[in-house]
Length: 151
Image (tube, rainbow, N blue to C red; front, top):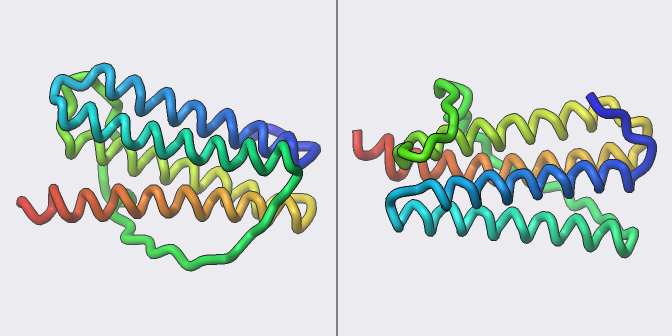
């Protein structure tokens, strides 16, 4: 695990992670053969760009505010087989990849919060974990609505 020496190190890491997510969803959009899927991927890329902008703003202004919020965990991603992103993947496959990606990001930030050397860093990691939990929940609800209800 990467060692962080300052809140700026953490923010740089988080900003880079959000950029990776933007790139991930943008690439999936470019590979999608279905126009509706392309739009879904672009929507998620745009959302990740918003998260990156939020983190960049926090870094530039040296502001940080943590507001604790309860996020429901449906735990659907806990029971799915991991899948790799492929150009011809189904919407169900996309949702599984996205849930696992968000679950891994949540776990990373949550684990970093547990070992953070001070409360400021702990709160930042918890805030980032909370954002990832919201993303995962969004995909789980989508999976529940469009995959589980159809079967």
